[in-house]
Image 1 (cartoon, rainbow, N blue to C red):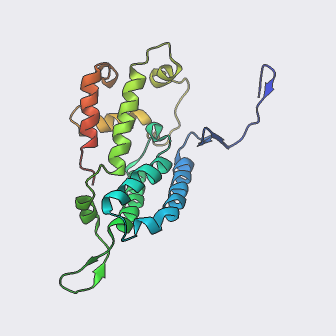
Image 2 (cartoon, rainbow, N blue to C red):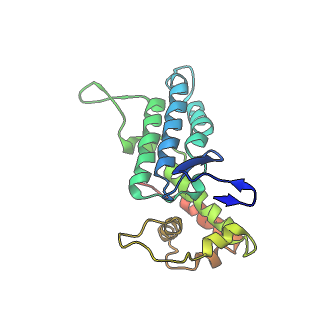
Length: 214
């Protein structure tokens, strides 16, 4: 493809600003890439996370300041299914089990790994899924307030021409926003109009951060 004096090669995928883009407009490969980078980052600091010389507070600080930014790069624009959200919880629980260590069973007297419910009780910060939901809503509010002169806003409200394929419609980013709003009690509302009120939208973002994610 030629644009003015520049030639662009047609490819199936490429990296742009650290994000993997593919010609099928899917984030599956990007999620795999983020998880690989997160696992590499986790293994580089796992000795610190299991060290008895560091407090649990400091270990959580390491996780949230070193590992989380790596795995969640560009996550405000992700459209996630419930299955994909579960993958992020599995990754986070792996890190938290390294931080909090095993627990001795009171009946059997043997050491065992912590269950997910126990990790939820020990980890007082927002879960990785809550972070994704709240930051996604925050970004949605910013885009909704940009106005028609901005390209990002036009992409949000624009309706592409043509017909959808006959199979089940693909899960869209705006579907995630509507689901998040439904969880905080604002289903079936004009969320673009609602986002114009910064204070009200900020309250919804905070409510999304405090939701209990299974």
